[in-house]
Image (tube, rainbow, N blue to C red; front, side, top):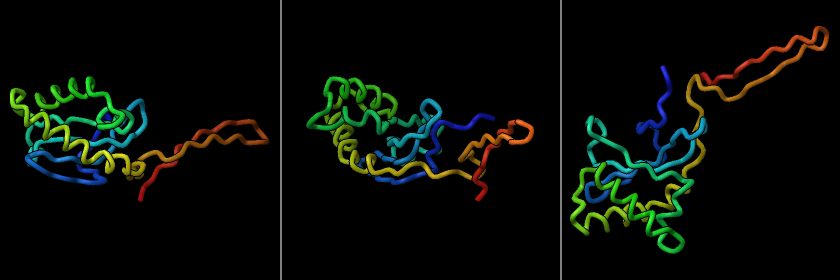
Length: 144
């Protein structure tokens, strides 16, 4: 069974406002866990229709009101509004979503590295026996 790329139960923070919830968590990108903020409708976590909208720390800058990219943000907002089942024809929904993300960018940038999970590989060792030259590779797992 493959490991999920995101787990909303693992949280660095949770904030809710105006029907939206921001969850600070981690997403697996290219085999590495990276901080992200998942935006969902408040109370929607167990709903099969829930589609978390992800703001990865690596591209959070596009949302910044000073250095951001309003054009890219506008495209992302439309996709987010669809996924969150919000009214795309209501300008206030666009504004509320952008302000919600912007208000929590600092929280996102403060998310620490993902803590090791029980049974997760935390190191790989390669041992070479000096007498025989035999090479042995071992994974070290966190079982705490």
